Amino acid sequence: MSFLLGLWRQRNYRAAVIVGGMAAIWLLSGLLVESDNGSVDPTSSSRSSVAPAERVKVRGRYIEAQPYTTRVVVNSRTEANRSVQLRAELDGVVAGLPVDEGDRVSKGDVICELAAEDRPEKLTRARAALKKAELDFAGAQKLKGRGLQSDSAMAQQQVALSSARADLKRAQLDVQNLSIRAPFDGVVNSRAVELGDFVRRGEECATILDLDPMLLVGEVSESQVANLMPGAQASAQLQGGAVMEGSLRYVSQQAHPVTRAYRVEVAVANGEGTLRSGVSARMALPTGQLMAHRINSSLLTLDDAGLLGVKVLDNEHRVAFHSVRLVSDENEGVWVAGLPARTLLITVGQEYVSVGELVELELENSAGDLPAPLSGDGGSSGGPTAVSAQQTSHRGQQPEESQQ
Image (tube, rainbow, N blue to C red; front, top):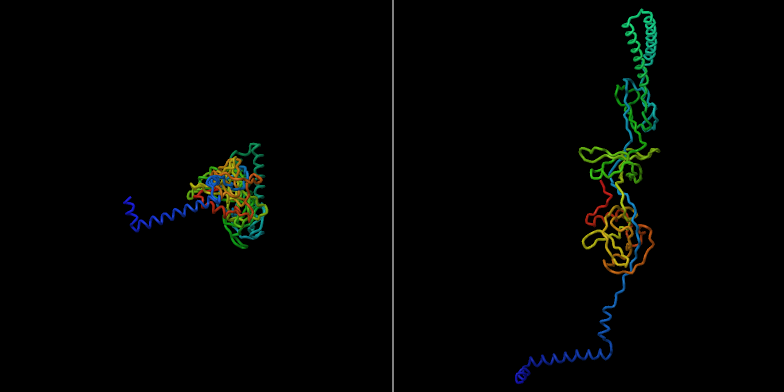
């Protein structure tokens, strides 16, 4: 007791006791006032803290897997089906050029004509010589029948007859070769001579191109060539934007010694002659088929591990994450593989929900797939630019539609 009285006499302790007592009185007064007004109820506060939260509303749609043909895209160019350089088979002066460069010609049309010179007369002489040789041979046979002609003389007459026939054939060919003709229907792409030029045997007269069908030519890497399907339908987009379709008609069996790639050819109908040789194109060749879903590219997301996927719902409308593999991108959306055949996909609100969370679903009409939303819907149009950005951010994941 004397100890406490001693502390009370010290000024610091006395001030601390007074301040502490005032604080306790202030706190007790607040509790008493709240209890009288009935504004605080500890049990009710506890009950409100465990009340269930309102579920997030999302929209979803059932999507169905569809067969999708995978393709390899290669740089290509158009090329004439056939290109032939017409060459002279005789020495002579160019006497006629019936067609101009760029003209369409039919098989057998005269492209270049050489001066006849004395070749018609040589043909007439060869015919006369053959007639004489035939008469001499017939006379020798009669003498042989009477025993007046030796076997050696008969053989000599046979040689003379064969020689006369060969001379006639040579003279006939010389006259025929005065006219250089088109070997097939095509276009005169270029002429190497003009009227009055002297050409020797083997020199070029003109170049003929066969442009129907037109070929789309490219090279495929050794990793993709085994997946090509000869005879399958292929497509290509030309430099000007035109899209052509044809069949894969040829796959080389030997790789290029430098590029180690294999030549491929796609034949495209060109009956109207609208396609030209040498135009750059992007060619898509079929390599196989798989089951895939078409969705909007804006629905693709990444999980915590960096895997590309989409958010879906189970039977209880609980959010789940499914990883997918990007197969292809098109103007209407992207094709992905890895989802169940029938999937309930979250189409609106996926960014506001977490995996494992129960949600309230507003079901959209199922159309079998999900086309890209219209502009103004708040989503991507699914065009090539948007998809390319997605591919860049998805840790380097590449679509099945590879490019060469």
